[in-house]
Length: 290
Ligand code: PMP
Image: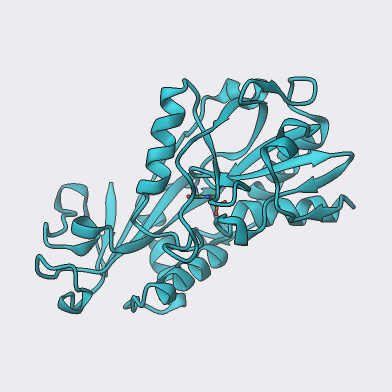
C-alpha cells in the first residue's frame, strides 16, 4: 500500500510519524473519511471544505491549498490502483515538544491512506440495526464543537464502548439538554407521516456529508425535510429511522432502547433513499482515472 505522507507517496512500512507529533500526544489534529466508488471520489470537494473548516476552528494552517489537497487525495487512490475504497485524510499539528502548546509545532503533517472499509455486516442493511441511547453526553459546542472533525474522538469512543457493552453496534448520543445529537460516527434521521427529520447541527451533530446528500435526495423526491430538536420520544414513535455516514452509508434502524420502530423492518422511504444513494455514488464524483 502506498501512503501519502507530507508531500510524498511512500511504502506502508516507511510511513511513520514521530512520537512527538501532537496528533499522537494530544489528539491535536483533524481528519476526514472519504469514499471512492466506481473510479470516482464521492463528494471530494465537500470533504476538503469541511477539513478546512475544522482547520480554521482549531487554528491549524494546512500546508497545501484546497486544490492541492484534492489532487493529493486522487493521486494516492490512483497509486493504490483503487476504483472503490475508503480514504482517511489526516492533518496533525506536527512535531513539537512534550508541552501541549501548539506553538512548538512548526509544521503540520498530512497523511492520506487509501484502503477499504466495511463498517457493518451486509445482512444488517437488509434486517436493520438495533441501537441504544448511551449515558455519555455529546461534547458541548461551547467546549469542543462536534462540528470540528478532530483527532480527539474520545467522546465518541466512550459512547461506542457503551454501545458495545449493550451488545449493539451504534449508540445515540444526547446533548447536555437531553436532545438527540447524533450517533458515534453517524448522523441520525427519522421519518414520521411521510416527512424527514434530523437534529440541527446546533444540537451537537457533525455537518455530515452523507446527511446533506440524503437531505438533497429527499427534497428532490418532494419529501419535506426539517431539522428540529428531537427527543428520544420522537425517535421511539417514528415510522422509520436510519443513520448516515460515509463509511456506513445509510443503515436502517429498527429498534431503539428496546422500542420497535415502525413495523420492525426497514421502511419504504428508507429503502428508497438507500437505492437513490447507491445509484448516485455510482455516477457522481471526481474522476480518479482520466
Ligand atoms: N457524525 C460523526 C461523529 C462522524 O464521525 C461522522 C463521520 N463518520 C458522521 C457523523 C457522518 O458524517 P459523513 O456523512 O460526512 O461521513
